[in-house]
Length: 240
Image (cartoon, rainbow, N blue to C red):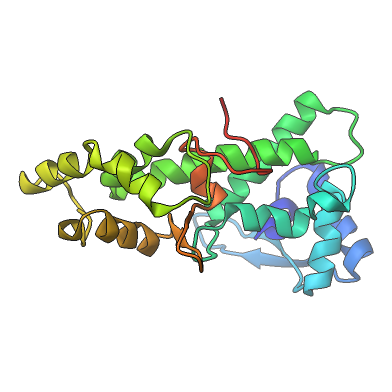
């Protein structure tokens, strides 16, 4: 998806990118004519080649460098980006992915104009924070009760014991959701509300917001953790 997007950007840099793909991967874009009738002319687009995993890794590192820091201990951009944008079920939304990289490119241009790559690793982290905010809004459009449960968790560090989560919920969020659901104000209320904190935990796991670890603790993927202001030891810090 990203290669198709960059290869058809409608500017001179798109041609440079298509050449980069061929030089890096040994496979080129294919010019293709689309559409065309009495009301509109045909449009030429370029179809991205099918690349191996290794080819895509090399190409992405041409844009972002090989490391997410000064050395390999911080991870590799090709795997780091989707891993930090994935929900608890390992799914990454296309919108989150493109949003993160767009913001990373803009931030690199402003804060690291002399960087040798198009994407600076610190700017990539900023892009992930932006994508997290958008993913949060998308989730709340369909499930407003998620925000009611997540706001009281701000400042908590994950992974954590579920008891820490349940204690913050008991102060009012569960009753608030129950009252709204009873009045028909929750469009898609939690399915297991009657089971209390454990039922809500299962509902959040079903949405990919919570991940249950083998030892029973709760973990929250970065794509939600950052927007809701939770911490993680050694992880990307939420925006202030």
